[in-house]
Length: 378
Image (tube, rainbow, N blue to C red; front, top):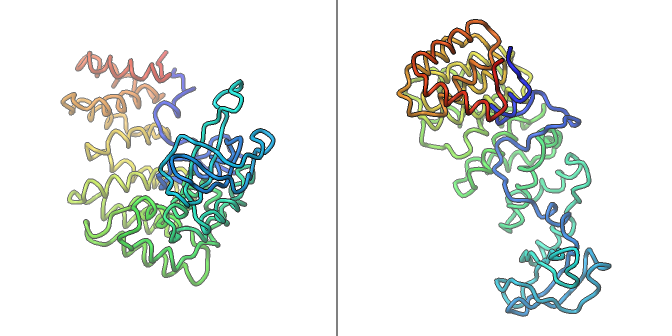
């Protein structure tokens, strides 16, 4: 018997399938690399928010106290540990007391602004509102002329759960998304999001041109356009389901000449669809995931994905991959042994015994790693 309590958390970067707005575990947008908090998140954590005008050397004239007047009072000026804001420039100052007993000792985060960006920041919906209600505000600021505003608007989508992004799909400016997807100056991580967003298009006049562009990008010769390619593939799968997967199999997974980067993007897109998609049977998706076992770069991740989906038809492949390895890929060792540890079939117990005999040190090390993650065989 195998204890499965921590298998999902231990082996996989993705949580249980088919989330809903009420799921306890929700992922942010899967193709958005938005690591830093958004302005709204920073504002929610601040004890005071002030509009100031820089005088130089960290000195600011206070224009307005937006939040925290009770804690901060109504000062006419502030001195902060930040002298990067040009004299005469507006800024938002987000403050926290240095400690509960620090009195008037505040720490400040400075966000440079002008009249346009200040209006954006001040009107930003508070984070206590549901994400699906907040996101429409940010749609019109995607790729805004102000770089900081555009980045913050994208960050909101990158940190929102996927169901909320999908809920606002009718509000996306699809003609603009198509242009941004092929614009060289648009950052790659945003293109991944725009590719996914194109795939979310509801029925209407934009659907056909959006899917046509996704197909064009997917079938373009390797090297012509690959920034955000995982999002493009994910959007294509969402829009076209099984026909898209057939094309992706042929072009990338069954094609030995496919670029490794494209195959890695495909792996990410399959993970996305396994997590959220509903139009392709899981058995069909698993067959595509299994094709990734044929490549050293993607085999460890494929074994993890098969473990997560409890697809136990690949015991022999896991054993063969481990034995064929020279031992210089610990990730493959951990993934193969982890698959065999978790698999409830007697065949997996026998395969694991053979690995212990053939490569005792490697197998023991992989088992130790699994045990550290809460995976144990009884």
